[in-house]
Length: 203
Ligand code: GLN
Image (cartoon, rainbow, N blue to C red; front, side, top):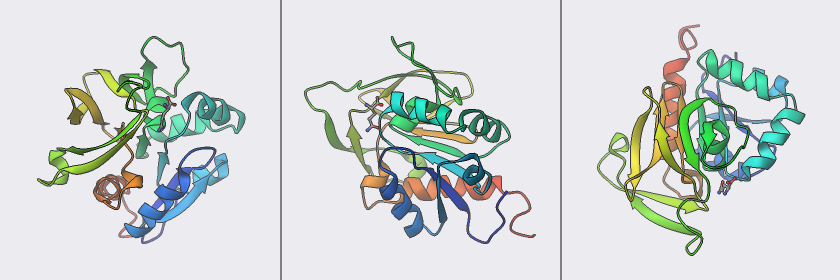
């Protein structure tokens, strides 16, 4: 486990919008490591899986030997955040598709759920854990959450559908906070990371 003043956040860098997350975490005061191998994963305090293409990334995680290491770290309490495709990869299952997942978050997601006519949209979203001001949520061919297990808290909804959930150390968002200048979700996740680093501050 990494031991430094700033939390070390890993961004899975196999495919997807990696650079935007790296910039947002740097602005929010974290040290960022791009994760491509199990050795990279061993250096980080937390892992973020960005947006991209879920079937591709599931295959790449296997090929790079990351599937089991990610599962073990998350089971041991490492904070994990999946944005859009990253949340699909983390889900228990995907509605109507026999798509393999990491099964880190007890939810069923539906891919490309908000319709094909308007593939992307920026929606002012009420997210009470981030304060009173609506969050500018960017949805790009986004999934919604169709079922949540008992330990899962829904933190935001769009049109009645869950779009931000948390289960202990695992966070999922249907939208892309890394694509806006608003870093409140990144700050919220860094709060989870700091809370999960037991002796780091006093070591
Ligand atoms: N539609 C993509 C998928 O199902 C996710 C889109 C995204 O991450 N922006 O994999």
